[in-house]
Structure formats: structure tokens, C-alpha cells
Image 1 (spheres, rainbow, N blue to C red):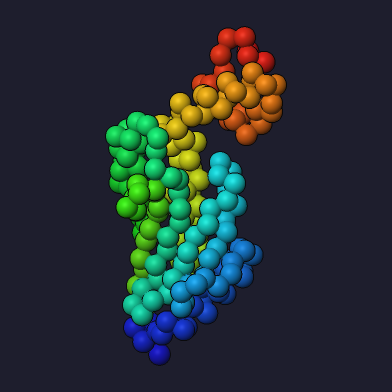
Image 2 (image 1 turned 45 degrees about the vertical axis):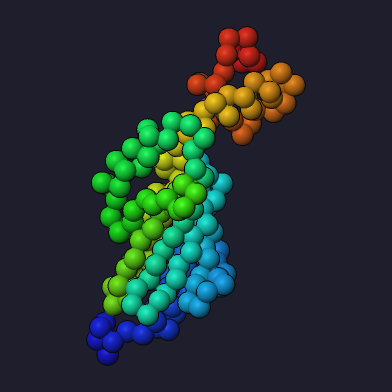
Length: 174
């Protein structure tokens, strides 16, 4: 059998095998041929991705971040510039403006090695820019949260990565 004769069922087994080999958490999705994958991140706690084996291609989609509250033009410009450096994947927005990373690969090109690379690319595309996107699109909300926590003596642990831009003179540790 040539790679041109590969069936969706065979590709689904290849994808499952790659996920098992990589010891990545996954479960069947709601659509035929869909596997939902959880990828642990450094900036984002985890990235959830959908891998759907269709009749002609493997579609990969991962949620990156919700629609920004502010600074939308700079936020979107940042994503478009990142698109120029990416292969196989691209950033996209849905009808509400939430950001996803997506890609499509012809079935005949899908191998375990490519699935492993794809998972790495999905994680990098969702995780790497996350903190910068938070600052671009949600800084005012983050500042309010920081100030509220400081005023009440609450933990700042989940905002610690942003201390250098959120901390004000007189805050703890300033």
C-alpha cells in the first residue's frame, strides 16, 4: 500500500500510537475521528487540543486565549507577526474573537513523527506567547486583580510572573 492509499482509520491508529508513545493524555472527542489531547504548559497550565482525522486530512485545533479586553489592534498584530514564523499552523479567531491555533495535514503525510512535531508546535504556539498576550489584551484587569489582592493581603502567586509590570511603590516586596 502506498501513502496515497492510506485510510482515515489507519491514520487515527497512527495518531493514537503517537500519543501513547509520547505519554500524552488524550480521550475520544464528540466527533467521529476526534481525539482530545491535554498538553502541559509552562505559562498556560495546559493546552487542550482537538485532533480530528477526516476523510482527507488531519485537522488540529487548540484554544489559545479569549478575546482581548483592550489593545485589540496590538494584540492581533502580535499574533499576525507570529503567523509569519510558523509552519503547519496558523492563528485564527472565531466569531467572538477568541484565539485558536489551527492546522491541516493531508492524511498521506501523517506519521508518528509528524504527530509528535505537531503536538510540540501546538503547545509552543499556545504556551509561548501566552504571558505577552495577557499583558497586551488584559493588563487593566490584571492590574485591578493585583491591586485588590494587595489591598486584602491575598496571595499574588498566580500573578507573580507579572510582578515587574504590576507592582506599585509600597506594594509588598517593592
